[in-house]
Length: 464
Image 1 (cartoon, rainbow, N blue to C red):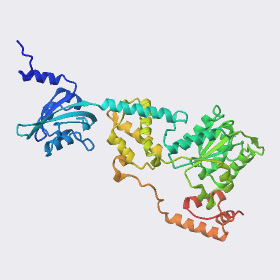
Image 2: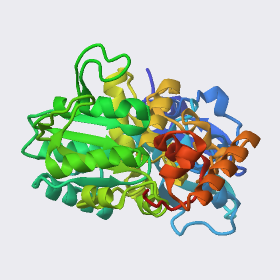
Image 3: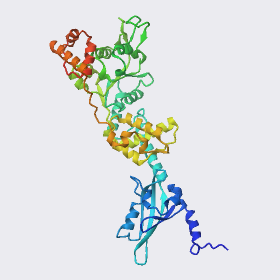
Image 4: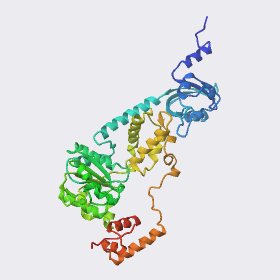
């Protein structure tokens, strides 16, 4: 007859322990594992053979000190009043995942009160905690981004941005968006358009720095056949293509003063003139501009027209850099994890706490665009269901290789230094009159302006 009393048959007790969903273990007075249940194997991934006889700290990592309290209790002079300690802790699984556990430990003593070891149990809370955090983040996302064309944010600075976007959408004034590269200026322009009465008409964005100055005027206004070499047919410009809608001109600080003047006339007269055409045509386009440069400094140096500046800056919206709203990094991370999980079809559920901490500590010189790229990079390298610190770009996981916050310009070459001296001399001789200086140098005024910008020449301008 089989004896089922586990007090008489230790084998029955072992079977009972191994059927439990929780992890059960015992350690000796030195903190080395003596027993390790099947439940503990399932939760941590460590088979019994790899654990028995090893110190309990083998389940610890850089930020996973779950068994530190147990080791301290075994080594310390005082025991908890009841001999029992319970707490939530974090350990490292065999495959490197962070596990969040709730553990209960009883310290065992002999008749003389000397510690001889401990017995403990633990329950895996990882799925519950991650699901809870994910639900909270998704709720925050739903509250903060729905009406703003993929703009994400719940901080006070972003709430002010959203408020001003709504105000801008309710009117027809020209809007200037300012902010560092990567802060979402084009998304903000798109939000204004999508919330405005023009939402059913075209929205066209143009990066002014990406189009050569010689072609930008033709691209914006169009041209007629024969207007210049290569103009073999009439061309519709971007203003005409955006008729009734919104035109977004990014990097407006890179536009030459001559083209600034032509854009100013469009804003004042509400008409455009194609290159090579004598007849103006009416236009109904809302203009939104953006820059990451200090337009005030450009005006002081003569590179930006004051009258154009005040015409495009009727209503300004400044987008804050990511370093000024770090509390939103977890929200942005979850947003981009969801985006790439859907677009790449990779079953990544979230990000480990170590990886998130690395992202919280990083200065983000490239702002939200850089953060999005970092998550995309992590998706490429990820092998598990959570993005880890090792999946992130090197500069995020290793502070020693992080880029400087500012990038000084490389020194000028001998040829550039010589050209700079020639231009400065021409400007002195012409008393700052750039038209006369350009004639002296035998170059066009636009070419002179571009060289002044490229060579960093500080000079005011006198019209001639």
